[in-house]
Amino acid sequence: MSTNFNNKTVFISGASSGIGLASAHLFAKAGARLILLARREDKLRNLAAELKAEHNTHSLVFAADICDRSAVEKICANLTAPWSEVDVLINNAGLALGKDKAQSSLLDDWEKMIDTNIKGLFYLTHALLPNMVKRNQGHILNLGSIAGRQVYAGGAVYCATKHAVKAFSDALRYDLNGYAIRVSCIEPGMVETDFSQVRFKGDVARSSQEYIGIQALTPQDIADVLFYCASRPAHVNIQDMLINPTAQASTSLVHRQS
Image (cartoon, rainbow, N blue to C red; front, side, top):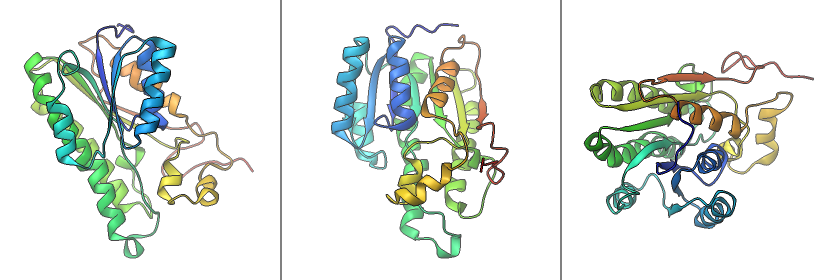
């Protein structure tokens, strides 16, 4: 086991907030150099400056939409050593939109979830994987969800995208068997981030109801899990991990304090 990431490169998508932001701080503290990808350039630059001041961390920041295949491919193709030698890829970017039943949902919302949660994750993995294979080392950490195991009403397409992340992670291990490359799928339950605000398109009152009466997981909780997986000895691959708040038994059974 090594918790020292000196001279290691960690690539984090969705790095400007939530789990991605918490992960950036944790890996920076451990000495990693960071590649930070998100849509909001101002937040990325502020984060890079903060990490430099706190941990003397070197970071590259890229403001791009993970759904933009050409942008993702250009970013990855133009990386030079040592940045091109990505040791850990954290595929964190993702979102849910709406919670209407399928027959009442917006098709544009479905397409955005598919583009971000599936295709964006595919684009980034496809762009970085050949160099991992060439170097015969690396670790891919995909952020799935409890929704990748259990479905719920109003989440048909979101659940489908997270089932896809789980299946993709499992299939990657078959393709990469024989190489020293690990693949982990981390599947959180309720995490209190801006996830619900995005889902309900800025409706703070509606999104806050999701966490009433429950101590949800925090971004730091999941960042701790990602770091734990990445810091295991090279022969240890934690393939799957489901993490729920104590009060959550499933996607549909949550105990709320009155």
